[in-house]
Amino acid sequence: MKSILVPTDFSENAGNAIEYAAVIAKAWNGSLTLMNVYTPSVSRYSVISPLITEEVALARSEAQNKLGLTAKTLKEMYPDVTCEVYVGVGETVDEILLASEEKEIDIIVMGTKGASSIEKVLLGSNAAKIIEKASCPVLVIPSDAPCHIPKKILFATDYAYSDIEGARLLTTLARSFNAMITFVHITTNEEDIDDEQKLIEKFTSEIKRATDYENINSKIVADNTVMMGMDSIIQESGADIVALSTRKRNLFEKLYNPSLTKKLAHYTHTPLLAFKANSKDA
Image (cartoon, rainbow, N blue to C red; front, side):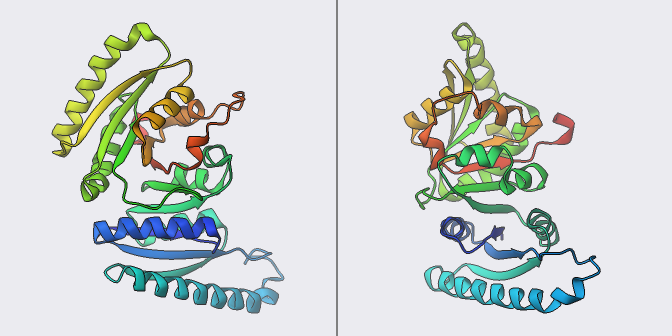
């Protein structure tokens, strides 16, 4: 059974992520842990912390009740999905990471919001910090992402060894949905296309052998920038999820360049799946 952790602040954005996670859990025959984190106004180590003990207890009780109602609704919609609730007290990122380790979570699913969501996901949000530090994959769901079974998954790669391990994890998810995985490499030099095509075909063959999953293909895209190339392939393929490795964050930096004036709308509604790169390959 696969375990899924879904942090929520009870917002609409988080609600969309919960529904998306439930769809995955059903296909996986997995379990959900709905989590809320309450951050006290002062540290538990503060000299005045005894004064907020009652405040924390009340906040925990309220969060527990809200989570319970959400879990009850999910159980009615997805009766085969096991769902538990958990309230953490402390800093949001620290508590989510701690829970993911203690509960041996297989994947964290969380929501994000706003037209600049990809910027916030990659550069400075709680989601970015969790992506960077979590030992398990993190799936970030934009607020307006349609909730349906993913059938087309793009994996952005530069053929690194860590991408093979990421692909192993990805095929576990894709196999549940019989989804097509397309490995895509973006080049900004059209003269490299033939060489890149040979590289990605070899890489894809290695993935198929390593995972015994055949529903895989590959694509080389040439464009002026990596960001424009990604936008082009997302539009062309109708991808349901974009996956990538977190190695060195260099791909993150390429995917979002603050100097670009064009905001690429497709990133605001395409879920992003980030895999932790092996430190030896960083």
